[in-house]
Length: 163
Picture (cartoon, rainbow, N blue to C red):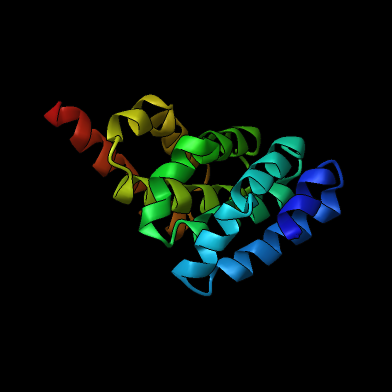
């Protein structure tokens, strides 16, 4: 119900934010709940909302957090990445380079992708390395961005070095 309402009303910012927050809370429950969210089109609704409201940092934060909690199920991570979650978080961070919360949530989700996705080459070729480097430069005093960013860069640079 939430997913279909979000897709139908994706131009309504309040619906997107509330829907993302609700799907995030559902996704915190269990692997089964996360699978239900994706099977019902929840990830597609989140991505549609993020795309429709790219200029809204609040929509980007809500969407990225919801995607992050869907990625708590390792079996869903690769499909979410392939479905467009990586592209969405990259667009979000590129659009809001000065927004601390967008960059924290973006780095947190990218770090999850780095840990679980099999195709590290896809991640490294997506523009993540310069994006994370820029986020770390803009938010030098934020421990979370520095920590996740360092882990992302180490993982991807190690992958590049071995290939």
